[in-house]
Image 1 (cartoon, one colour):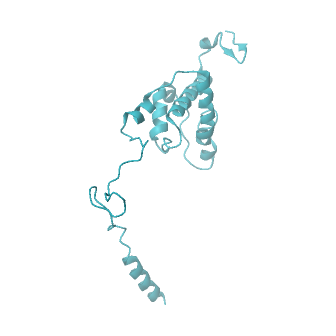
Image 2 (cartoon, one colour):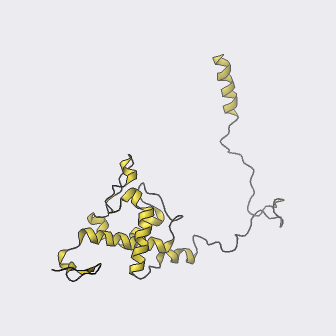
Image 3 (cartoon, helix red, strand yellow):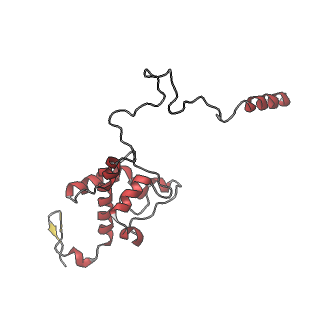
Length: 175
């Protein structure tokens, strides 16, 4: 009985060809599938190519710093970043606590010295074990998250001399 099952498995597996030979159309080949008879169809209205300036400029255009931008960044950070990076940015979120790799702390010298553009680039393209969030986070929100990350870094590593006269929720810091 085992030999019959083994033989049947061999026969079935030999019919699997890894989909090497699939029906497909060449770019300018005629097709009966579409009304115009062409296999190559124009992209739908409003589609933006990743090589298009509109796509590239959306990532490159840094919005001006404002309280509204920081609040939006905080909101988006709490949604997308805290599962791994934790609310304070030390990399001790829920995901790493379940056995996944810890992301780097935002408070290391290397990341404190990195520009906001670097943070946006990592959100856009991913880095290490972090995958891209480009399909989840809009370009303007990437800049907002980057601004919030910089504010987090400053909150944990601000030199005391820079805090004199700073207002925090109606209170003034004294030197």
